[in-house]
Length: 229
Image (tube, rainbow, N blue to C red; front, side, top):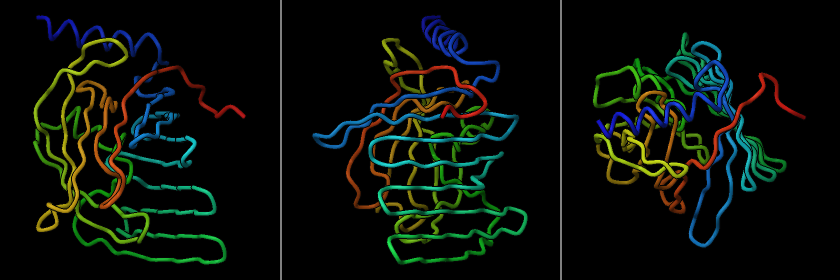
């Protein structure tokens, strides 16, 4: 009973802050890496099964279009670095472009296996979290620095209680790692709201050898359909 009441309270908090679609909103996360800390602001507009996502922080800026189970577009900017991925699921072709100063690199991948391509782990696993009874999801993802594609594995690890914005809530714990023989080389952990799929917490590195990060949800606000300028 207490668990159900805690979860109901969190859903009431979300529904009172967001517009009609339960995923549309402005999500604020606090990120810490060693002695550095900063805010990441996720602007999410949901339309049916499509999510338009824009993220800004002092570290970087990126945007994405995620539809169904795949990330169709992902664009990243940090300083003079620009990275773009475009995924065509009907042709199973992934295009990668990296631009930095006067250098430009392009790669095209034909992904043979019938797996989704997910580059936005924070909001790209929603069907797996909220609708699927499966404990494991295998998908493709790309390492931005190199443009190489890897098979990934997301695995549910049960539920845990977290304190989110001063409230105790239940969260689905999910580990994401490289699939197969590479599984020992990289792993990160996410916690999601089981009803909406909203990311509540993250711990790990964004790529193999990267800095260890923690990121947790600190605020939810309404968002207009068009970005404010």
